[in-house]
Amino acid sequence: MPFSEILTCLGIGIISGVVAALCGVGGGVVMVPAFVFLLAMPQKMAVATSLAIIIPTALMATTQNTRNDLVNWKVAAITAISASIFAYYGAGWLKTMSNETLTRIFGTILVVFGLRMLLQGKA
Image (cartoon, rainbow, N blue to C red; front, side, top):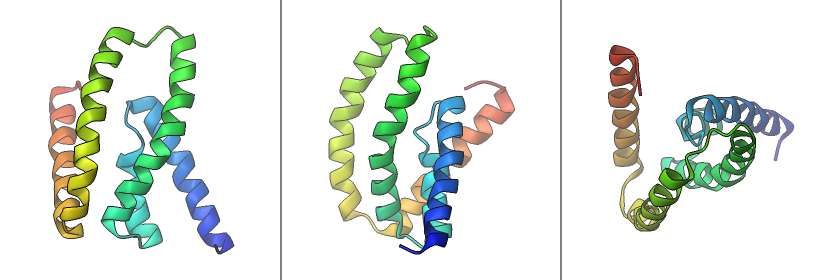
């Protein structure tokens, strides 16, 4: 891996880690577009790579948020069960979709939720 690519990955990691910790996203909001545009990664690979990175990112942020007594563990447990089950099936669907379709779905979700948050001033 060229040194410039290592630096790009480090930069993506820094930005996505901060965004994940401050905004409650897994960092994929930053990582997926950055992997596609800066590292010329196909959409499917960008999504899969982002998901692999979420595990250590979430563990680190959860450790700190637990220390700060900010985690609602009842909500986290129930949501984690359903999210995990459907993420398994979603990962299967990922293989069947084109990169273009995935890019459109991802972009639409970002725009819709982003506009809602901007206009309503809340999540």
